[in-house]
Image (cartoon, rainbow, N blue to C red):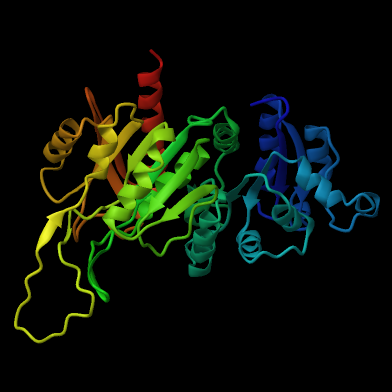
Length: 400
């Protein structure tokens, strides 16, 4: 971490607040400037004087501070911070953050700052598993908030399960990875995601089950790793990840044009989209009426986006995806070799697996002379692990 890194630590009212003192100590050891904001609930568990002594700075508690408000103190704090970290983050705080409330100093700072926001949840296991909390977490992730944990284990109330705040060492390591230097700082990455839709007539099309979740997760992970990301996306119900330039397309032809018009300026290309292999030859101008017992649709191959990118004279580092129902390794390695890819990520799809539409996935990743298994986990975690592999292989290839 740099000596110029300014970290604003928010402490909310949970028993894990005592661990926040250790977070301040560890951040200071890494030459960070730390200022602490405590909620009213946090002050029931810890005294501000503890954090003042550890951080070397006054502790901020009140939104309406007469000594600070004359200079718009909360705005100055928001501008000062390079990163906001809330640890512990209670269920109540997460709910208020989700709904954009600004009824105390900490929530106001979260709204007023452009800095990355990390939250370390800490609550009873039943509260963490509650439907309202799950919905709140989904929304916060979509907005680009970084979730650290929670961990599993015994809780202060005597329950056992998910909801414990991560240990201070784990939280500080996560902060260090984010404010870096990061794995893909200033690299340009072009990613495709989602399905394509190939028209039969004005109301019908041929498509597949891709939801786009894996590609969107990869785009978010690439931004987190420091990359400048452009996402060429087929039709999905997903919101663009924070910090990603999105290019919406519908058909395989449009996706091909969207990629090929941009790829010459990119360092890395990741083809995560489920692009249609075939499209109807004859697209009817009017809706086909249901008059015949059967209908024959003649199909033709679509352009192979991945192969066309890999064949460019000055191509980017090229990563493919392979969704397979059988012989996963054989098919993935064959595709890696046939299309001259730098790396390929393969996953099984079908009723009994993750993949299309699911929030979890697992990948087998192959490159010439190497292989890695990314075990079953939420797609955002799989995406981060994949980006780490891509970064490692990219830098190995460009270090000579």
